[in-house]
Length: 177
Image (tube, rainbow, N blue to C red; front, side):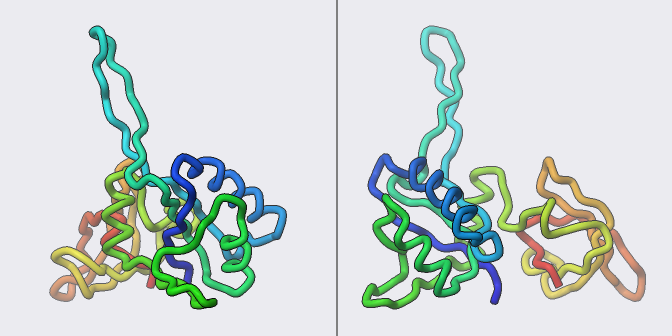
C-alpha cells in the first residue's frame, strides 16, 4: 500500500501536543513503516511592531493536523486513539476508514508552507526514474539529474524528440516511477 496524506481533527489549541504524542506513539508502537510525517499546517507572517520586525507562526487550519501514513488497521488504531485526536476528516464514522487528500489538495497546502509532498532526502536520489504528473511535460518519464533541496526543484532528463533533454520541474510536479 502507498503512503498518503490524511487530515486528523484535534481540539483547537492542542495541535502541537497531538503532533508530539503522534511522534512518540510512532516510536513506541514501532509504526515507522506506517506513519511517516506529522505536520501542523502553518505559515510565517512578518509583523512590524514599534519598528521591530517579528516573524510569527500562524496556523492555517486550527484544530487540524496532517499525517502522512499507510492506512493499515494498526496505524489507523494508533492515530485514532492518540490523546487529543477527535477523528479523521473524510471518515463517516462507524469504523469506516477515511479517504486521503488528493495530491493537488496536499500540494497546495505544503507549497504554501515551503515543503513538498515528496520527502526529498528519504525518497529521491540522482538517477531515480520519475513520472511528471503536472505542468508542460505531464505524462513524460525521466531520470533525475540534479536535486535542489532548498528550492524544491529537480532537473530531470526526459526524452524530447529522440534527444535526452534536461528540464527543471517543481517537486510537486513529479512522482516516483
